[in-house]
Image 1: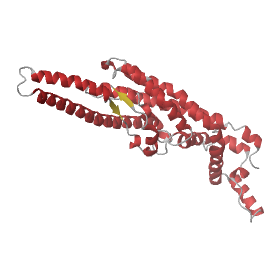
Image 2: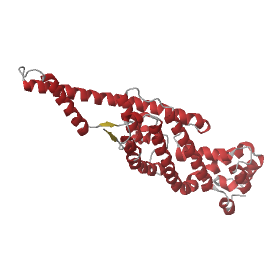
Image 3: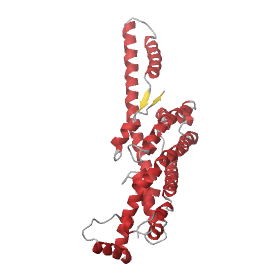
Image 4: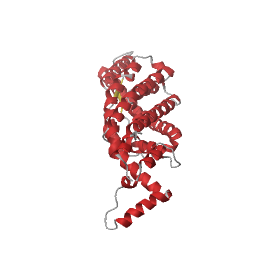
Length: 320
């Protein structure tokens, strides 16, 4: 009776957690890439160019699905900030504008997503040993205890026998009643209780992904759908901010042109309107350099998003 030290030593907790991390990160990457591949680019040429540059340098949208707060995600987010902004965005700025929304532009974005998987794997696997022992193992004991109490006569008899022998003592923790063979059979998925799937789902919900946002059992479909929805919302945010920026530029141009005409006076002669237009156009180019468009995505659009916004909103990309 009771789980032995030898039995625990043979339980490949960390290995199993790390394998689940690898599996889930690969799925995350594939679904994010699929969402980018099928994403409809903006119709307006200038907005299309601006979108892909800002989008490429601000791909923390793909990380909003992860559990917010400290630990692994905080490490991963800090690793992402500088590398993304300096990586794909700088490549896209050097590209021809007409190519930014093409397959080449998307390929650069996908390349940046690929490069982050190794960083994310390192971040999550740094915390997996302690998490496996302190969080996962107690949860395993409790879950197996719950299942066996509902399905195993022998297990229930063990617990009842202890209660009768020690009626005035506190009930021991589940690992006191469990046996090595029960634990290993359940953990490895060798019985009908599917313990291996329960462990993976626990890693999914408690270590890596937000509960309720993408369900473990439907992740193949829901990850892709989640990214599609988020990209559409981000594009709406982008277009709204870009429209405001274009309106500011339009008003700057008109005010500069009108002030130039007033300065020349009514008797300035033929060509005054053309000169004012050229001067305003040159001034507008300087204005855009001094006041570049900055896309500030608001990641608080999603459940628990406020916690993410505090981390992610610091990564802004200046777009010429």
